[in-house]
Image 1: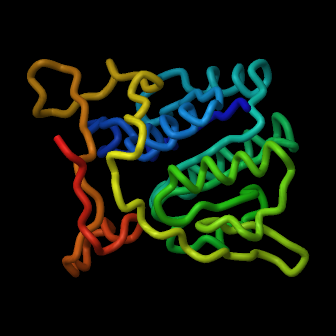
Image 2 (image 1 turned 180 degrees about the vertical axis):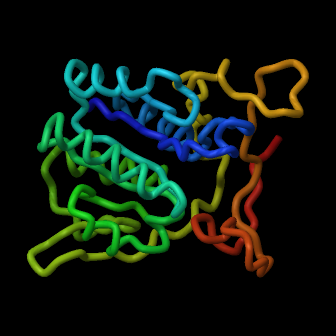
Length: 222
């Protein structure tokens, strides 16, 4: 199945100065590709002509599903991407993941342009969800998602955190425009980042590290 993953742009000073790869989408993209799907990614935060590329992919490549990752600050821009997707093909399945969808999985479905929400860690959930979408199977037993049924939004129970991060495929860095990532502190120009652990037991009120990945610390091997 063809799947397009989108990272919205906030168009603010942070986006312009600190440009780092959207690792959540790269991780989900790697898992979906390992499951046999054809995956492409658009990072609207750094790609200068992302609107034209999005239009070309929606009209020419015609993905069956579009996945969008967003924090609360990026929700408005994520919804704009969903509207563009539905305008190109109302039959495209639009899935929202990330911190905001994890906090408010049922609420985001009331926006009308989001078909499904993923809450919690997305790799295993996305693979199971999109396999069900491809086969038009029921969604009631898939942990970590929210969807609409006849009574409105339904939020399934959360999927347990992935116990061994080494079981996951490598993030799909090759699907991202790696040459466009940089920070004011990178003298050599291009930079990247990586995830080496997930989860945090500490109660810092300003941080959302535990929201998606939970309180238990899990590390990947070197």
